[in-house]
Length: 493
RNA sequence: CGGGGCGUGGCGCAGCUGGUAGCGCACCUGGUUUGGGACCAGGGGGUCGCACGUUCGAAUCGUGUCGCCCCGACCA
Image (cartoon, rainbow, N blue to C red; front, side, top):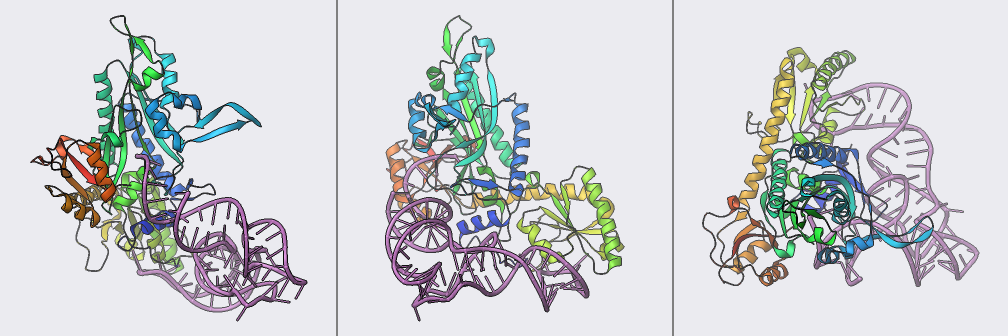
């Protein structure tokens, strides 16, 4: 491997991202415009996202189901806001079996219309509620411009859809799932997120209220990592999702929908990775540790491999996602670079010296505050007794997981600016370093649009109470009028 | 859709004042190496996005076409 170094983040963040995705073999462009091929290294991350989120969905009472890829065009046209929101980005099937179809079929951009059509058949009385459902699926949106993981024509996601008896119940569900996303982001993605509500202009087409989790990337831009919508009765009215209530009257159900997508993988990359390559939180790393055996002579080779294999099997039997790199045509150094590029959280080196001492060397992918500082100019290396290896891997994985969250949180905080009251100053900040600017807003879409036009920044959300500044801004930063909300302004993906 | 760039072995590129392809990496074989990107020797693999045209002759010139990437407006 004589590959050149990656473009650095400082040189060109965008080029760094693109190179990293391809070099770490996460995904690449397919022969079809805007569609990506997710390679095993990337798909493995998605599988872990799926497994863990799915568990959280089940724990909160949801069940999985599957609905068709194709949706009659007329379904999409039933809900006015929905049509308007999605019409430009639909892919439409017009032919089947060699004949033109009587009614074109749309490849789902999202499944509200199909799912609520079915819900309507399943619900008669209030006892049939709530319905708490989720599907893992692919969807298509014909985007103008695509980027691997962040915005592709086809992408993988989960979409939760629920139906409830009352508005309050629906709102509770909407917020509960937002909470699930937040926990997942923090506990698994090691990514701090801000929860909040979207303004009307950023709201989902057809929703009453849209809530979101927003994360900050290393270039200080925001990325919406998940959304949860309270759909009110907008869809139930259009799709006749009615039930007989406790008082005997016919009522429309209250719906919610919520989703996260393969975009999360893009977020993981942009939050944690460095100029050496991918950095993955251990809980979402398809390979948590890789063993690199080191030897010169044949005698050394046999004894090192024997020991390494024993440790490998031991780790594996205890459930660790571990790999052993026995390639013989590659120097250890080359392997180090490769596994670092691929984001494996820790490397376990075993050489003759280690065998003699009954130790191994563990090199964590990031520097840990919890361990002895690395020597100047060197990477951190930890000497671990062989008989304590399993515990050590477990501990170090936990420390990396926490360290990543700590680093990302510190970075976000140092790039969050509060207390700005001067619009010119905000413009200056947004055009220079960017970041999250907390400031007042009069609640008028016009002032929001003005900022977007002049700075390309948008209101990411009206943050929940715990994220707001201790002293609330009194004036709208754009107009100087009384502020209705404190909001977060930022450029976004 | 506007602006820019590009299509030549798997990848990255050179060749483009016309004479039927070359380099680096990767790959295969053998040998020496291996604690931070090894080296030597030998070897396999493309007809130059596609179409038409000019010409004795086209990767190279002309026209057209398709596709991709990057920057903007739209979006998870």
